[in-house]
Image 1 (cartoon, rainbow, N blue to C red):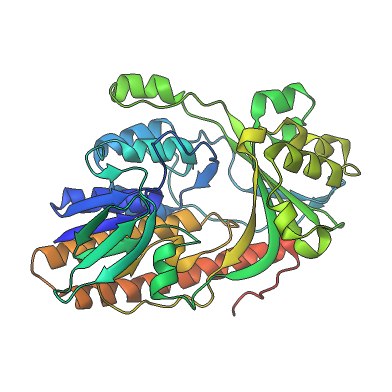
Image 2 (cartoon, rainbow, N blue to C red):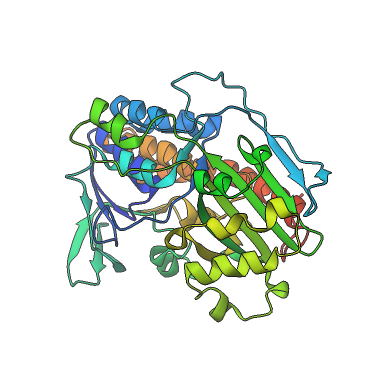
Length: 401
């Protein structure tokens, strides 16, 4: 069996590792021109379920490097304030894992992706923008790319994200629902922020500020256990990891009704202008809060509309299979989206390996994957929506009961 994965994000790369380990032929087609194109990255929470799935997919060498470059945790949990730094109630996220050097509970997205690319050099094809697929009479699938090239496989996995072109062809009626929230993500260098007066209380915990003015700010620290290039030089000298400084993931949320500008303008703002927008919108906040976004790296600051796939629906069992945001987009609240994609990779990889070995028919294996995926993805989206409702107060889609 030959598997073609459309999209070289976290879920697609984890799936490639899982299939490669089981001897299944796999090729990943990535639209980026090289592995160095994606510089917009931020801190990702890895849940206990996500870590189990990650260990099921990824080789030990990659896992050791990932653990050594993951987040150093001094204090867990979340604290919440209003814009005047008055304490507010905050939900707790339980994590039963012991704090050991092998634990992977938060990672830098850019470093994570580069670590996952290790060992897949012969598998990933860059500069390949998917255009369409064709189902043949022999039950094989031909995929076509914008550069005029094509390839043929037995299974095509849509791992191409929220705006999946594969999904647009097979399920054009399954666009994720717009939640009405517009989010600015930013990387804020920690040393620079503290040098310019950021209060020490924000150093070691996830902080969320719920403004009574309709604006909301999250700060999540990413403190590396060790510098990624140093660790790579020791554990995997042939693998290049980019230098990275400790930083905050800054997340600023505002409902589109409060934007005072249309989406086509807001979502097209440069990183520098988005940074200035947040600083202006928080100008009346507590002095310890109002200027934190002024230190954001404009090259790593961008805006997105938050969306959710409600309800999660299984695709028709067959050779076109969805994975990650292509099939279950969810808001970043709760940090569950990446974990769901990694769980997809583990479950789908196991299912396709059974097909390759002749244990199951493709439709049977894919149907079983869909049943499992819909269950945990539905739970993940429900949790993320509940946290979004708590933090944002106003969504254009109410959490499901």
